[in-house]
Length: 135
Image 1: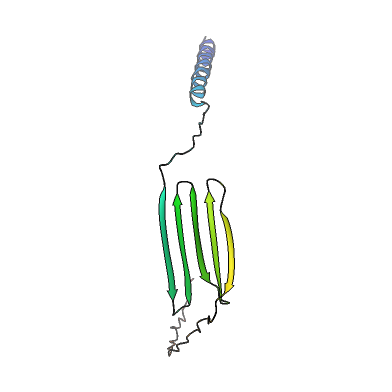
Image 2: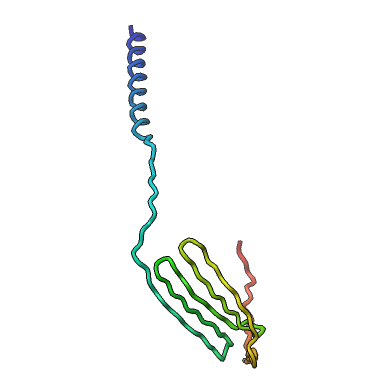
């Protein structure tokens, strides 16, 4: 008699477990549908420029750029270590990518700055010696 009751209870438990897991598996699995939309931004407009001329380090460079919506134009320049001025003019139209033209020309009379060596007395102190090491 007890074995019949145990079998019936086990059968009911098995059916309940299938029903329970079946419902949860269905509720967890939901296919994701992604809809990709292009981002739309408002109008863009900016301009900037800067120039650096540091006699101490010899650093000479600058840049200017202007953008209006999907059109960007600009240029930058620098004096290379060999005394040539490198100028890069670039533009981007929409998704065309970065399109650049590079020009190099020697700078007449350019002399690279000479490094200044300042010697200062350095004091070295011996580190304390520890004779008893514990591991």
